[in-house]
Image 1 (cartoon, rainbow, N blue to C red):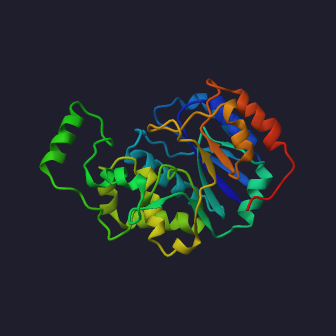
Image 2: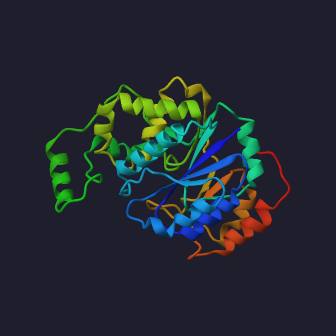
Image 3: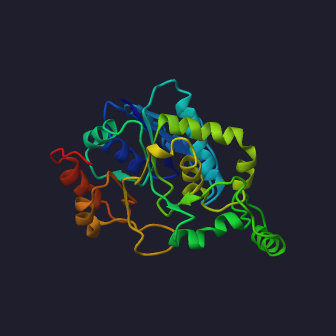
Length: 293
């Protein structure tokens, strides 16, 4: 079994190297998408590590824009085109870190071949997230673009035009943890093919906000692969501070990380607290192996 870890990065080459080394395993390869705004020379040394490639796909990513989702999809396409028969593609941020040993993660996925792991809520249920997130779809958003006066124009368009409607007769799925996932190769191929075959959906999504948190879940949960999808992305993410970004984890959070059944956690920043990563390395990644259910 082989697993492709797709890592989205825009800064912190040393932190990224630490992540790759923490996940080192003979069954793992690493594909790093480096934001086009970053200096590739600062990250070139990573390709000296076993199984690491910087993707040829490099997009200029704007936060919360479809550009980020597009980068994920195009990198997924690049991985599929390698000809390597990966069983899973695991999407991560460069600020993620494993909280279980690499062998435990490999064992978990080996026991769950054919399944995919995402986190989402349904727009047809009493979803607190969708109660406010529906405006991501119903209103026009200009985050894909960057020009003077764009938000004034955006507000004017939304005042003049009626609510938008998702272009397919689908139930929407998404959530605050929806950006990060582990999907089977068949799901990954379906995702790429579906977007290729639905250019109208791509055009629609260019004018949404935060599509990475709902578009991929929506496509896959309305696909033939729905029965294979588990509503758990196996990430520990702390949103307790509110706002648009999760809490940066520190030593204060270590006991919660130790108790967590999840495989990964985010997000970490060594400039804020590097000691928590030392504790994870010494006490969690070096711990005796216990299967994750």
